[in-house]
Length: 371
Image 1 (cartoon, helix red, strand yellow):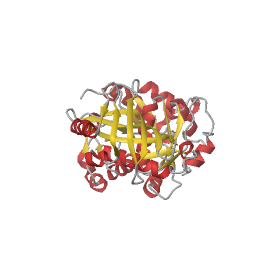
Image 2 (cartoon, one colour):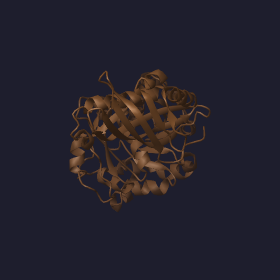
Image 3 (cartoon, helix red, strand yellow):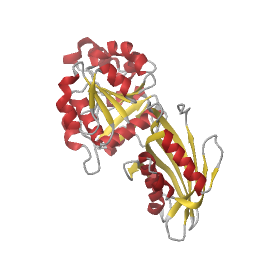
Image 4 (cartoon, helix red, strand yellow):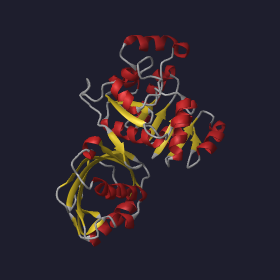
């Protein structure tokens, strides 16, 4: 995923470094890009530098980590360039630095999210990474579970899923709180702010085991791999071979993200059928091969998926229902687009004891870019 970091200070610099080390393409921005050479060297990977305008143009996702008092001017000046991009905002109103603006926001009871909506119209804003200090980011990333929780709030469900995947890539536990107005529940001065709480402790403190005011409730999730997690509800089903059934799903998304044709084909049975969204049915190994060859020549994927349902229907048959979120990039344009999909896998246990994909159906939740 291409990520622009606007504000490469302690927070932005550390988060960008974690993302670069996890394989994302990161551009750190400064009015004086040459001053960031040491940060880029430490971040490694494909990290680069640029101006704020260049980082905004570069990123499919933008991490905005600038002083809160700069946001009222930054928003109107940049909201057209940021329109429809996913923007993760880390800022906090601070009285000593932001003066009267911080006093207004903190005293309003509306929370920072309501102001961000006004300052950044048309932008897919997510409140994220505002509850943790730089030392927590530096010392606690990718620690043994339970991991430090990162509360998230947005009016855009797809943006929340993308932000969640990026929190996982940075080495933390994403906690979806709800709509942007609910960011007031983890603003400065709240129970979960600057505590280093685990994801489970934040969920308990915010009552996320129940539906909140927004009508959203977060599903408790277990990470299976870098690409795949499974809900506790799906894992709790009476499925004796659940781990073996999960295995081809995990392998599928790893192969999809790497564009590995042979690895994908090995996961299918000898008589596979694909049902692509609004396209003809693809029947048989040769046709499935041609379909993926064409796909990998035209599209790059960077997807994270959640197994929502896993059911073993008989000793030889099971189905898995997933929701995926990530970046869909046509190779012709190189312009990535945040995208989400629903998928359904019908799996068969073959004579060698391995579960493989017999039928596969998928559909995007919104219009995809032209190829």
